[in-house]
Length: 274
Image 1 (cartoon, rainbow, N blue to C red):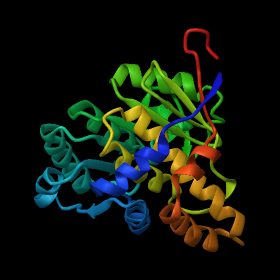
Image 2 (image 1 turned 90 degrees about the vertical axis):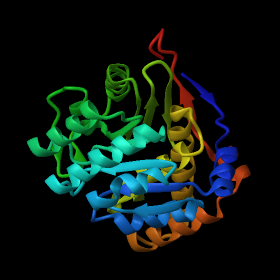
Image 3 (image 1 turned 90 degrees about the horizontal axis):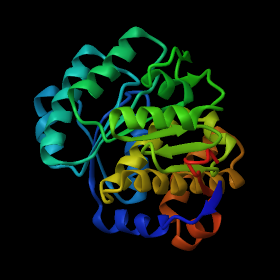
Image 4 (image 1 turned 135 degrees about the vertical axis):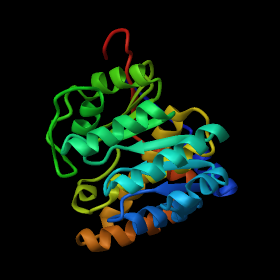
């Protein structure tokens, strides 16, 4: 494993310059936070859940983010419509398999989206990704019951099987397409104390993937920027409330030189296993 420097600051500037539209069919619990983090990064969020407009909205977007955190039969149908439209347009589709492994309905919904459409980036915690890879993983609500030790191998397996990028979030994040593996060690433990940081991460990834066709690089750069902002916010916060407020400010004020200096990214030699 060796440390590398990603050109995340340049990609951050590109998001701000292009201000891509990021269409969401996402978790009702965190819908505001997802919209705000996208806006703070400089992109343009759209939260359109109705099946009647899902295709039209996807057609004007630069990326589509699907999050099953509050999935229903009606939302699943809208997601499939939006995914089909996004596939026809050729924009990236990000699936946050929030809570996969908790119920059979969530699992079935994720697998239906993966089987019937093109998903470019699959994101989840260690147990959610393990479930998507076919393992008998357990999830407690939206919290992982997997310690993440085998997260990289599991993510690689899923990435190669589904021909997509896979993101595993946790104390260390894993981003892989099955061949390249990035390990990200940025972030702060306060992120786990705030509802919605995982959902926000998917929205950030969508914003960066909207302007960068290398989805592994886009996801890694997005997470680096988001988690560095979290580190800076945590230094001035007194608890979850002030941290969340500070997080949006720090995202908005983030500078290229700060991203370059604070990023902690490593690459794994997949041939040797480390």
